[in-house]
Length: 254
Image (tube, rainbow, N blue to C red):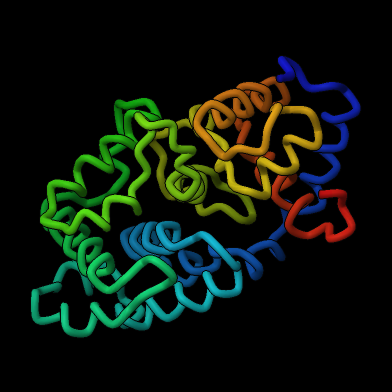
């Protein structure tokens, strides 16, 4: 496994970053869902729920995420604040792949409880490392009555999960550029971890940055460390380059 990034690879990553870190990226990506909103809490809730169901075919993700926002009347903050068990009959009909109606109810119920006393999900990560914050988020939600099946939708970094969906959500909330929303101001971009999925892992592997294509925590930490040698303050901006090279360059060797 590489301990440094070759100059030619660094140049390639910076070139691809310029190519993909553009506003046009939004129209192809799940981040378009939180971009529909302007209020902080709406952005958070829309972003969080979208991130939770962000696996699989991107068109399917976008279709289902828009559908979920319709379930919440395109007022996610108002909806969770006013949620009651009466809403379960409606919510239980939403599903996306293995994310079923009872999972929808679990997350909406959890968000309702959280926002009844707190102003922002950002507080879960304040004063903690990113890994500690991700685990605290999981533990907080699992206090909500739930079925065992719902636990798989909350990453467990203590078991080596890459926590791709939560790291992506954190990128959306913390970074501020032409794509990411940057509504959280108490978390430093230098502390973020790369959202490692099949695309970013594939590219990183072919570039010799990791020695396998496994999307696990070990590779997340190693790859993030390497990317910090290119930009110590904002390493996860290279997510756009790594993801784009796999997802958009169809002729790239697999």
